[in-house]
Amino acid sequence: MDYTPTLSFSDLEILPDQRRVHCGKQEVFLTTKEFNLLCYLAANEGRVLTYEQIYQKIWGNYVQDIENNTIGSHVCKLREKLYKACPDRQFEIRCVREVGYSFEAK
Image (cartoon, rainbow, N blue to C red):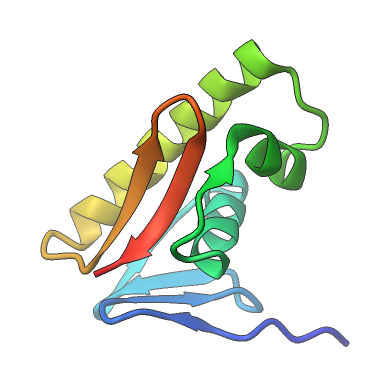
């Protein structure tokens, strides 16, 4: 059985094996794609992941124009849910224009 360690940051805890996310004491409910996206970004904290890397990891095949919009849409929804649950958050999902995204803990 594979075990994926918990990803912990000052105010965010991601439990991959339970598919749960907590911000402080509040649970954040994410879709499967949002959860997978958050795990991938957080597991690569501080690294800029390209649109292509993200799409191939989360969705499979990559076609630039369509997929960049798909990723952006999912990141927007993910940020909205996380930032609402964590108004004083110590992390950010940062857009690197025309390249991709990175997860950064403060």
